[in-house]
Image 1: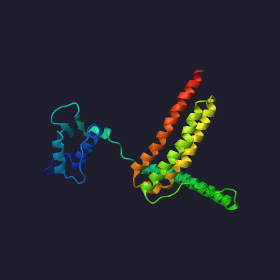
Image 2: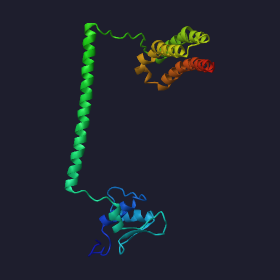
Image 3: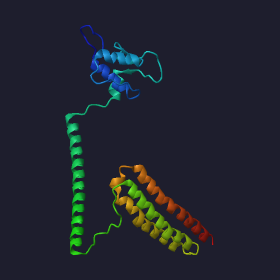
Image 4: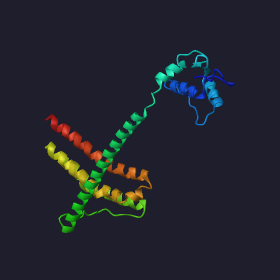
Length: 239
């Protein structure tokens, strides 16, 4: 209700003006900086083309425009969410706590399963049932050394494996066999070439562009070969 006494008699209270603005912001945004005083709020309204009609208890545009709606306290009450009761707040908190508990339980089960799975692997490895995989890729001290080793491995792989595969492709007639050999070739390339990047990942984090460039060189070698595969398969399907 408006002030009943004092110099602001008949005018809306500051909380009521704030309420009008909050309702208005459902349609058009007017930002009120934290800590703004009454004078500050009135100035912000003026700058946004609004004024407070204390008699009608409404926020009205100085110039009638469709995008500047008139908001009175009744509309504001309908537009703004009804404050929750203590009971509703307690019920909502109970639901949140339950969801949090379920989430934490699931996370614990997942971590527990991972720990148990790892323990089994370690136990088998100690018994000799599982051999620790060999890492054939070398680690280097500089990115330049990585690039040199990578290019050498890639060129060797292209000459000895990719080019050989492309040549064999000319006489292959079994589409399933072609796809199997294509898959084996990529796996071989990952082991002989890409593993160099993986083994030096920490070093290459300092130069992501170089990592991407080297990875692209590898893909380009495959793309050239696999384009031949696509052409060959199309040719066989026409027969």
